[in-house]
Amino acid sequence: MPEKNIPEKRFSTGAISATVWKNQGISKKTGETVEFRTVTLQRRYQDKNGEWQTSNSLRVNDLPKAILVLNKAYEYLTLKEQDVPSQGTNSQAEKEEVEDIAEDEENDIEEIVMWGKKWKKQKH
Image (cartoon, rainbow, N blue to C red):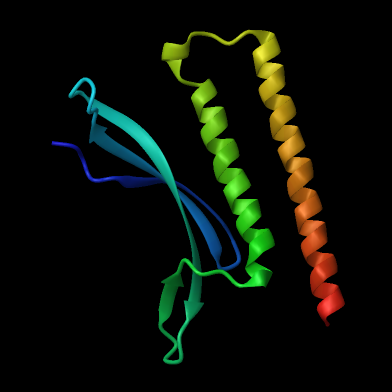
């Protein structure tokens, strides 16, 4: 019987978080147990009574943070795939390509954060 999925990694900024879940299921093709990962996105907030709640609904101000944590989750999962031993050793060119992608994503994230700050400044 497959195990219950468990959180593997969590990325958060402010009230927004992306959680990577490690799951197990049964392959429909082979009937064997397989492992796969999923990502959930949520926003935490306090209700009128001061109790912490979670929501999947985001406000416009949450979008840059959501993009940031989702990019980090994607980067984590993509780099994790590179570490899987069954894929064999990666060539130096493949490793450099992954590093270039990660660097490009970091630059994109910085641009998104700057955009969010500019947008917020214009609203006030």
